[in-house]
Length: 317
Image (cartoon, rainbow, N blue to C red):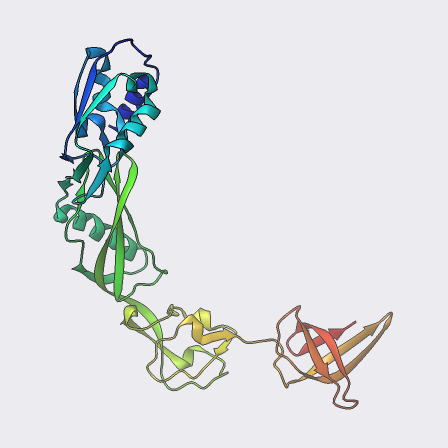
């Protein structure tokens, strides 16, 4: 439909002035339109030669949202017509209302149809991450009224890769491939997953291993953070805070154990030209491979920088 109206516009733009043409345009006081745009024929009665009947399909502007209205002064209409088809506009005799009220009347989309679309989208999203899950619609758009035209839907779920207790499925509506409006559908969700759970209280900085945890099948929507689901994820990791008994382990609770820890007595190898000296120093900062850290010589109290090359191993060059 939009393409057809655009084609009409192109045809109109090539119309030339015809001498003594007699076209009468009578603007109505109030009209209702079913499309996302309105034409001169929608808002006025047009009488004249057959050659100029094409004015009926001349697009003038965007309609209001469905169920709403706009008031358009006749002077705005005249300006628009003169801009689009100046040759024809010069032959028009204008009559009727000074302002036209344009009501937007559309067609309703059955909520059952769109609920099915959004629930299917959520089901597909959950099935990518969980073997067991449940969901139910708790809040949806009351009415979906759209203009006439070819209607298509696109869904999206804007959330991290973890199920939440309340999830929104967005439904974008397109009319003739042009975006029209978005609607939200709220779902209550539960999704179970194998997750590591602390057997007992774990103190801060404790190195983590399989003996500290058990694997339970729990609803991941009952806690924040992304759950740790495999024992191998504990390798070279430690707790960044206290983990209470029965707590599901999430990635924000652990960190990689540094090769050098602040306050440790570490081995230092000093290289200068062809000479190398081994000594000891106290690390003033934690770090990992290839990171530079400050150190303190316990004998001289001198400070210097070195590069971590292994566990408790630093090189100074």
